[in-house]
Length: 212
Image (cartoon, rainbow, N blue to C red):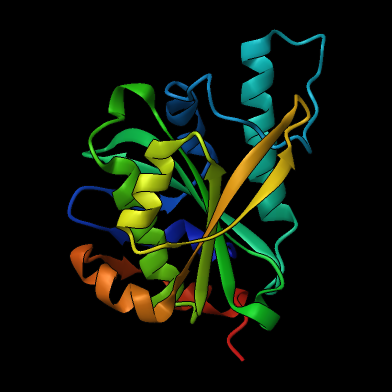
């Protein structure tokens, strides 16, 4: 029987990595490399009676499940597992809010600690940007990072993002300055040629996204 959830057959393959939407059977492998320094969504408050490591895993799993369960063509978040030679590297999320109106996508990701420093974060984001611009008809991608996170900002700028505004952000543990950046489809047409990908299984997913 064919699954009514078509994202199980979507794959983005690049020169270094393969990305596919996270399935429940992927979770144990991804949780095994989940870093302890990734800032989780504050919308999933901690459960004090759970051990901290178990609670972090619970919050990550719930966020993935909520993204599936709350999907609409106008407001969605798609969590891709990132793999290299069948080994887990991390998770790359692509998100659209008010996608019908603004054709804008945002992104977030984490990379396993032993895999950092190899360009995998850049290649994973390039893969979902190619998907957003070439398949979904996005016109703009946005991202942000704390102004002290020069590694993340360097990745964005290398992919063609341009600095926008700096705004204060309340993390729940204090106020930080966030650097916001934008990337247009026009700018991506040049930068994207450095990160060719093959996208398969998209046609079955097309009705899940706004196109008109």
